[in-house]
Structures are given as structure tokens and as C-alpha cells.
Amino acid sequence: MISAAPSTDAKDSEPPSGGGQPVNPILDVRDFSLDDLDPILAIEKSSFVKPLGKQGFKKEMSLPFSRMRVVTDAKIIGGYINYWILDDEVHILNIAVSPTMRRQGLAKALFDDMVVCTPLQSTYHLELRVSNHGALKFYEKFGFKVVGKRKSYYQDNQEDAFLMSWIKRT
Image (cartoon, rainbow, N blue to C red; front, top):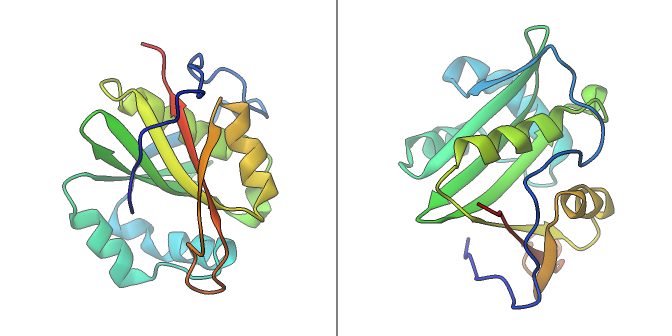
């Protein structure tokens, strides 16, 4: 995946503070471990057209710049985030929440945790399908702006992707 600098019209944003549903106080965000693989694969399969798979997750865990975190609610894994730390930038690869646990603040908890875990990074990037209106609204709540479009980015159906960026105020 390629990161690009935000356009000059991308405005700074305050760190995340609301961005949607209130976060459940019993949520716990922690590092991903191999013991989490089976429930994460189920979430991945229910969330993405082309799920990553076991080998993909294992490879991702081995990359020195990759971070994977899971969110649990009463010890049940409800979602995960995968992002790369590249110098002063963060590239968000995936945020996914179990369909039965959506709209309960889990994605927000993962996003907020990522921001806390990346205090030295100031610019965040991601790509998302142009048809993914829910994700677009989610990221816009945190101050992300569409700064470009990647033509035919997704291999499964040649769908375009929005490139979104957010600059964290420090």
C-alpha cells in the first residue's frame, strides 16, 4: 500500500473525542496474539470481500512496522485494527468489528487506542471502497478528509478507493 501526503486543503483536526457512539466502559483493547486468530478470522470473513486468511495475519504479525490490536467486551473478541507505522505516518489497513457487536463503540475504541499508541505520528492515511458509505462517515467523524481517489484499486471488482487523510494536532 502506498501512503501519500495529504492535500493542502486537508485541515487539522482535534484528537478524536466523540466520533460516534460512546465507548462501552468494559471494553479492553490489547495486542493481538496467535490465540486470537480464529475469532479474528471469523470477523475478517464477515467484514471483507477478500479476507486476509491465517497466513496473511501471521505475515502481518512478523512485520516490524505493523501493529495489530483487538478489542474485547467481557472477554469476547469483538474486533481488531491493523495499521502500519511508517516514520511520522500511520497507514490504517483494516478496522473490523463483529456484525453482532457493531454500533457499540468498538471501532471507536480501536481508533482511539491507535491514536494513543502512536504519539509520535501526526498523519494518518487509509483507503476505502467508494461504496463503503458507513466507513466514510465513520472516518469523517474523526476529521479524515478525502484527498484523492485510486482508480480500480480493489482487485476483486476493480472498484475505486478513496484515499483519506487526517492530520493530528500535537
